[in-house]
Length: 187
Image 1 (cartoon, rainbow, N blue to C red):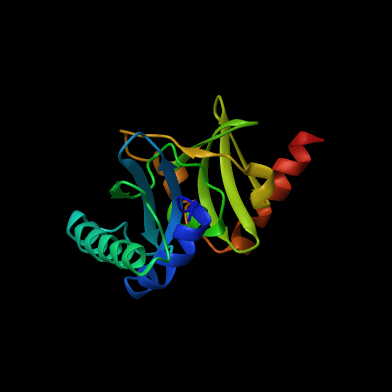
Image 2: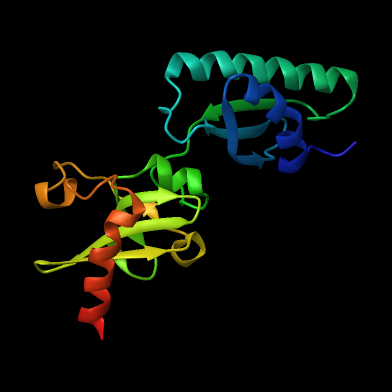
């Protein structure tokens, strides 16, 4: 049996992670000599939940390790001479690709691949509302997730400016006047 693929590993561990309220964000398998490395990034399934604590990650890591060992012993998986397991959460360099990624980062500054920096004001299943600034001009726009795919969170050490903070987390319809104003200014 060949070394397990990320898809096989995902299918194996997803039911276990669901018991912890977690989902697989990414799996990387690196084959390196006698021991291979399996790196699994997990996050809370609920976009409003906090990232898992170190204690929670340790508990999940033990459970995943036991599951993988049991799967190897039963012949369902084969890691060859052995593997090391690393369980982590997605870092700030992890691209925002799914609605829950955007929802989890409402209020944060992101770097958009095609348009520079923007602040996430609101996100739901239909898309994302962002704020961009050029000099003192604020522009509020809506986007489908595919239009802003590949954005990554920017590390921000200062507090969110007050004029931006008051726009974070409004209902989508509350942004409509700001979006219409931006449309008029862009014509």
